Structures are given as structure tokens and as C-alpha cells.
Image 1 (cartoon, rainbow, N blue to C red):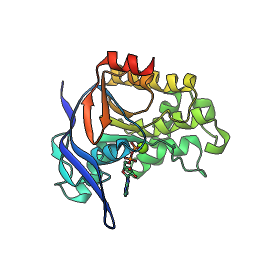
Image 2: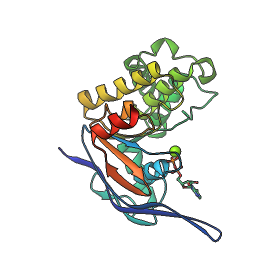
Image 3: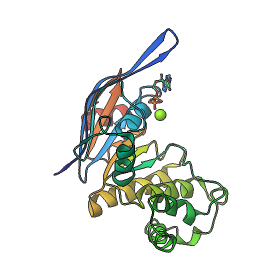
Length: 235
Ligand code: ADP
Ligand code: MG
């Protein structure tokens, strides 16, 4: 399987005045095409920091992130931005949809930013809305949608560019278990059908178990989890 995303010896230390917070203390991770990876960890363990570093949004203090063979933090910022826009999709914990835009417009936005003509962008956004069962909500604004629907729209927006890898930060954190299940079903379907890789941060061990690989971020280190440990932890 071809490698999409990799990090080696990833370290991140925040300095706040005289205070030093070592959040990541040497994280290694490999993500291949079609792989789904779950990262669990308690609140404040550095999960969001890890995703931001992997996605080129936050510069690590030390270490290397490689996306499709390019060293993310060694290439010029402009090249990094276009690589990120082409190769990665982000799903944030709180959907970050634009409130004044409709569902369709929100989903089309990454395409418009990427220079796709409006008509084509609209068509592709509609296809994605259909794929997630939301075509009937295309004209709704975020405030007119339920939490689960908003999160599905956010996922469609992350996928509309057909990224090789999606980084999702607690994408189901504010959803009930039925809606959370639907989101995971959708992600795993895309993994199977399109080979999209997923790195999903979650504190839900039951959902983590459904991914191909499970890791726990603890004390700044990423440890592979045995599926049996997860069963014990959630029982
Ligand atoms: P998680 O997503 O697992 O809850 P985060 O990655 O958000 O954890 O945060 C990990 C730790 O880093 C926390 O202690 C948090 O307070 C600290 N932290 C995160 N971002 C910053 C920042 N910009 N400046 C200082 N400390 C930060
Ligand atoms: Mg977080």
C-alpha cells in the first residue's frame, strides 16, 4: 500500500512565558492509502496538536512530517498550502461551517477556493450532498440543520476535493451514538471504495475499535493499542 502521511520524532513544546509544556515527545506514525487510524487519549493529551502538526497547520518543535513524499515543513509555505489543499481534508471538532452560506455553498467552498468554476463546483458539491444523504438539505443554512446534519456537511466539505487523507478531530464528539455511527459508516465506506485514508481523533473507544489501527496518545507518546485493551477499557 502506498504511503500517504508519515511523521518521525514529532515533538511539540508550547512556551507560555516561563512555562514549558511538552505536548508531543517524539511521535512516529505511518498512514497508508485506504487505512483508517484512530487516536484516542484523554483531554489535553495533545490529540489536536498532533493533527495540526500532521496537517501542516502548526509547526512542530522538532521532527519531520512527510505528505505524499514531500517534507511538509521544509518546502516553501506556498507549496505547503497547495499540497495541503490538494491532499488533505480536515474535519474539525466543531464543524466550522460558514453560517451565512447554505449547505451546498459550504461544501462547494473548497472547490471555489481551488479555482474550480462555480457551475462545476456546484455540481460536485451536489454529488457529495447526495452521497451523504443530504441533497434535500442543500439550501439550508447551518442554523437550520441538526448537529448530526451539520457534521455530515462538514465531512462532505472535507471530502469534496477528493483528498488522499482526511484528518478528523473528534468528528462525532457532539453527536449522539446513532449519528456518530452514521459518520463512521460513511468514513469506512470511503476508505473501502476510494482508498481515502483517515486519521481520526476520538475519545470514543467503541468507535475507535472500528478503525484499522488504534493508538493512544499518552504522556506525549503514541502507543499502538491492542484491541483487547480497548475492550477492557470500555467494559
Ligand atoms: P487534546 O486535543 O488532546 O485535548 P490539545 O492538543 O488541544 O489536547 O492540547 C494539549 C496540551 O497543549 C494542553 O495542555 C493545552 O493546554 C496545550 N496547548 C495547546 N495549544 C496551546 C497553545 N497554543 N499554547 C499553549 N499551550 C497549548
Ligand atoms: Mg482536541
